[in-house]
Length: 256
Image 1 (cartoon, rainbow, N blue to C red):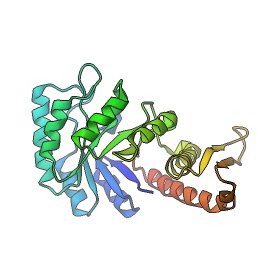
Image 2 (cartoon, rainbow, N blue to C red):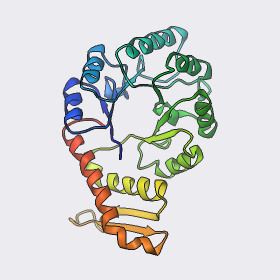
Image 3 (cartoon, rainbow, N blue to C red):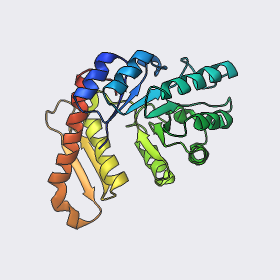
C-alpha cells in the first residue's frame, strides 16, 4: 500500500519522513482545503528526499480561475519544477462544472517531465465519466477523489465505479475524510480497496460493532472463491498493519 500525506508545515513534513510516508502533497491552509505552499516547505521536502507533489491553488473558494490567476498558477508551476519536485497537484473548472480543458492543456505542456494530479475539484464535476476521458487525453497521471462525496467512506461505491471506468488508464487516488475517530472505517475502506476493488477476491467486506458501546468489533469478508477462505487471517493481517501505519501517522498530527 502506498501512503500519501497532505503536509502543511515543516514539523509535519519531518514526521512524514520519519514514519515512512511514501509521498507527500505539500500545501498550506488545510482548513480551506489547501493552498499553494511556501517555497521553504518545498525546498525542505526535496532536501529530505521525499517524493514531493506540490498543490497549485492560488486562493480558497471555487476552482474557476480568471486569466490573471491562471498566469500566477503557471508561474508557480515553472518555479517549483526548478526545485526538483516530482509532481504538481492542480484542478481547474469552468462555470458549467466541467474541466477547463484549454488551461489544463497549458499546464501539461509546462510539465512534460513530472507527474500531474487532478485534485478533488473532480468531485465538483457533473459528468465524471467525460472528465476521466478528457484527463486521460491530456495525459494527467492520476485523479484525487473521495468518490464525489464528502469523504471516501461515503463515496466508496462511486469510487468503485470510477476505478472500474478508468480501468487502469489513469490512477485513481482515493482521499479525504480519514481521522483517528473512524479507524474502523479506515479498516473497512482498505479491505474494500484491496480485496474487492483491486484483487477482486471478495464480494463483501464489513467492519462494525454489534452495539456502539461494545469493545469488540466484527469483521466480515465474503470470498468469491471458497479456496481463498483459509487465507482470511493473512488477508486481515495485511490490512490491519496498513491501518496501523496510517493511524500512527494521524496520531503524529499529520493531516491525511
